[in-house]
Length: 389
Image (cartoon, rainbow, N blue to C red; front, side, top):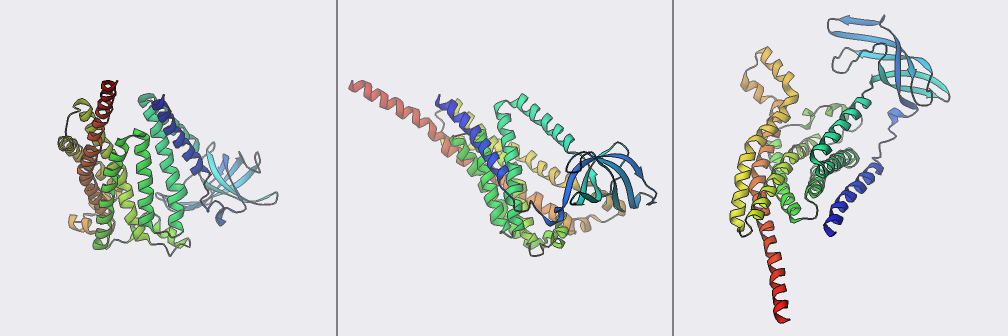
């Protein structure tokens, strides 16, 4: 009965935390850019490309669309909308008849002033994809899969509702990032293990690895002379009125935050392996248990390091292709600032993975081997009571 209550209490804590984070305001809900506007879906009824200028792959000018508004204050009305083309393949989009788009309606009282085509509407497909993922996860992993969904949602909300607004307000990104990482690491591992010593063991090992990553990342970001402007959209952020932000510290925090997920994964793997060894061999000492954990860690570290490399470099395939097509020498490529930033991310994150293995092996061995003495003490106490009777 007590174990069942503990299991339910973990889910209740997670659900309550999700509702609290959802209700928490960011302080940026009423940004000036969206005042006096309505953001709604619209169906494209017809298009006019007479003012679009094409030059090879590049298109500029304006595409005019006749749309039917599918929501908001002017639901059901038909109006003309403008799709501004800037000549950028990355940001431009073209609409066809029958497309569903997200539009921004500017209005005054009951009169529409203008309608701007924002982008294709994708939220329904995103929700469908997320629902498929959740269904598969729960079907495969059961209660643990549901807890994984909780941790996924809490992580998204914590980043959006707490960390991002704090960074915008100028809070020190290093300390804020560490606090958020500690909170998420402990919570996610707690959702895996519940009220158990394994939670403390895995969390301690993962967080020690995060601290190592944080220190080395800060040192070598300065040594590499990397400016935080290498991050995508960072200059746009500065030009939006946040020129006082320390982008370099935000970049530093991103190094250990990005690697913390892999470190959590490795720490849980090692803790579970050590716990399994102790369950099978209750008389094992902490040194032998730690050696078993290290053996598991050595096997996992090889693939984890490669995982980080693929995760960080996957978005830079086009850049690498550009370098190769231009015949750029490899020493020049490795010396470029944005390439150096990715090398820094990968190697410093790998430092954390290498250190989290011995840390977790040691903490799990020390904490979990102590559990076997508890039932022995209870048994001995029971025997003493029986002998007195």
